[in-house]
Length: 114
Picture (cartoon, rainbow, N blue to C red):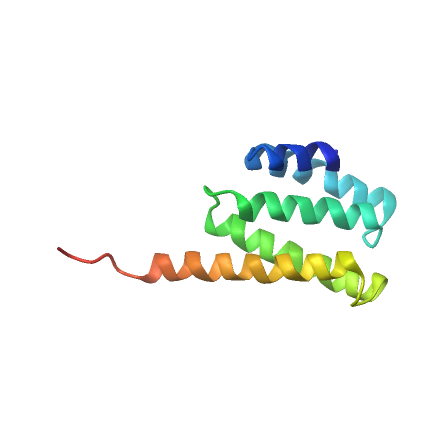
């Protein structure tokens, strides 16, 4: 499922990828454990699908940021800070936070009057 969702994301079908992983990632976490590499990757892929989506809502961006924060924390504990996956998770966490900040700023900035 993770590979399929990743392919959907590569085709910019973000909503479909997020929907698929919202259903399957919890199953992987329950079966494999929350610190299993595949369970982490599935949540990472889901978060990326949420924040890469140009139609993402603020709730989607918040969910992505929260998911990446937890994934990065677990990866740092389990895999170590120098592991390539941990570094990728943390980079995407920074990107998701920047997107969330930009969305919040855009929402708070009043439109210019002509």
